[in-house]
Length: 132
Image (tube, rainbow, N blue to C red):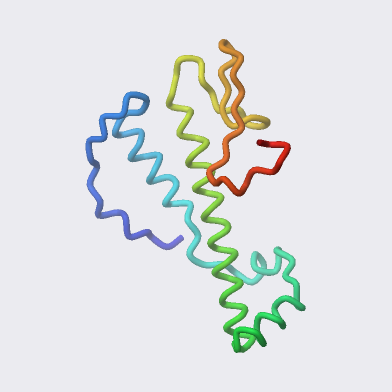
């Protein structure tokens, strides 16, 4: 794994009521360490790629096949990293305490005592009509 450039950052005092500065720093650090910078051929091929779309993209954007594949690699890396940010959002709630927990499946954060069950979205356009 390639080392991320954040390593020179010093810990700041955020004074958040639900998470200590150390826990916040470590939570951010764990997320950054999960970021992908490269992809091997096996992982690249694991995702089904539409050859017709690649052909259209190559012609419409006046790119050769190597450029199109490089764009697809960046898209896959970005999607993976976006998922890590989603886990960052969800898992920060494990620090809330007071009956809040992050279950392994189902809802994103739950408070059984208060009968509150939350399905969280980090972007407005990820909600379908049934989720809203």
